[in-house]
Image (cartoon, rainbow over all chains, first blue to last red; front, side):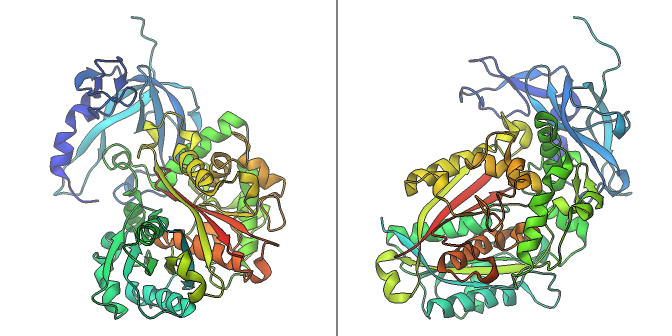
Length: 137
Length: 385
C-alpha cells in the first residue's frame, strides 16, 4: 500500500475525532460524513462529533492480511454500532480475540494504525476497546 | 428495443496460468466464441475486467484486445464493476444490441490474478471496498465476508459446519467440468479442518485466486436464428447497487442490491423464482451463497443454509446451484466470472452440459456480485423454441 499523504491528512477529523454530520432536516447522525442524508436524501453538512461509544455488531480475527498489515496479524476487526446510530468499521484493541463477543460495549481510542518503513508516514486513527467503565450523563 | 440473444460462447480453462498473458488468455476465449457463433465480423467489443491495472500494469483493455483479435477499427472499451465486471460487460453489450446501435457484440471477461504475490492481489481486490473507511482499517475482502458470516451465524444460530454442502456440491460438480480449476472432492471433514483466513471464514469457504477468460457473442433475436442453431434468449438483464461499505447498509444481511436486481429481473421476464430451473449464484464465499438464495426468493431470511443442508442445491435438487463448480471450484477470475456463469448457463440451456446437465433446463438465472454486495447483476436466460 503506497503513501497517500493528502488522503491521510484530509481524513484527520474523522480519524482522530470521529467528526461526522447531523442532518438538519431529520436529525439523523451521519458517519462517515457524506453531505447527503442517507435517510431523507436532503443536504446534510452540519458537523457533528460522535461520542465514540457503541457495541460490537460483528467481528472477525484476520489471519491473512492485505498488503501493509502483515506485521499486525492476528488482529480483530469489527463493525461497531455507535450509540448515535451509524455503524463504523474498525479494529478492536486491548482485548484478546477469544474475549470478543457480539453486543460487547466498546469505546473509541486513538491508536497507531500502521507504519510504512523508515520513509513513510505513521498513520494514526480510531480503534475500539472494551468500555472501561460505564459513563452516566 | 430489440430482444437480445447469445449466439456464441467460449471459455479458457481456469487455473494458475503463469505461462499465459492477459492478451493470449482473452484471445483463446474470444476466438472460440467467434467460431461458435460462426461470425468473423463484430460491431463492438466490451471487456469485463477488474484488476488488470493494479496486477498486470495494463489498462486500456478494449484497445488491447481489439488489436490482438485483429478487429481494428472496431469500437471497444473496458467495463469495470469490481467482481461483477463480467456481468456488467454483458449488460452493456446487451443494451448496445437492444438499442439498435450495435448488431453483433463480442463480450470478453478476462482476469490475470497470479502475476504478483498474494498480498498484492489481496490489496487489489480490496479496492472493491471503501478505501477510506474499510480498507484503511486493515479489512481485507475476506474479512468483510467474515463479518457478514459471523453476524449471520449469531442471528440465525447456524454453525460453520452447516455451510459445508455449498463447498462439497461445488467441488463435486467441478469434477466433470474440464474448464474448472479444481478436480478434487471435498468432504465435510476436510471443510471442517481447513486453515482459517479470517474467522469464521476458512480457506474452503473462499473462492481461489486464479486466471481465466470467457466470452459471449450477442445478436438481436430477430437475426439470431439465422446465425445460430441454438440461440439463447436473454429474458432479463438487471443491475442494482447498494452502499459500497458494509457499515453503511441498513441491513447488512439483506443483500439489498440482490433483492432489487432480482425483483427487476423477475418483472422483466414475467416469472417467479419457482420457474427457474437452475441458478448460477456468486459463491465467492459460502455466506454469499446463503444470502443470495435468500435475496433471490429461494429461501426465507436466515434459511439459505437450509437449502444446502437439505440437498436442494444439487444437480437433481429443487434449485441446482453452481452446476459447473461455481466460483469455489471452477474458480473466480473476478472480471471473467460473470461471463463464465453465463457461458455455463448457455451450455445447460443447449443441453450440452454433459454429466452436469440439469434435466429439462429451460430457464436459467445467473447472478454476479461486485464487492461485498454493492453491485449485483442478474441475468435470466431461456432456450429458444
